[in-house]
Image (cartoon, rainbow, N blue to C red; front, side):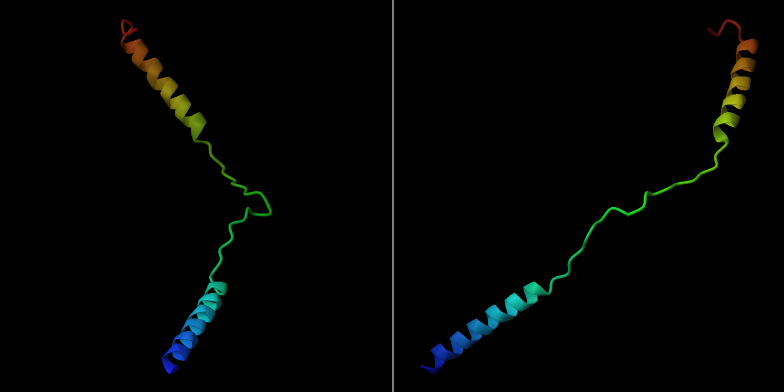
Length: 68
């Protein structure tokens, strides 16, 4: 009779501890920011690259008129 009572106590304690541990799980929330994300960049590369490329292409075409 003592074994059955011990097993029942062990089973009840196991279930209670499982419920307790399951209730203490870590939760992670992923939320969108309240304010919009702003990226401020001051880039002037586009104009410089185009001017250099145009000059190089013009020079190449002048050196090789039969290229195209």
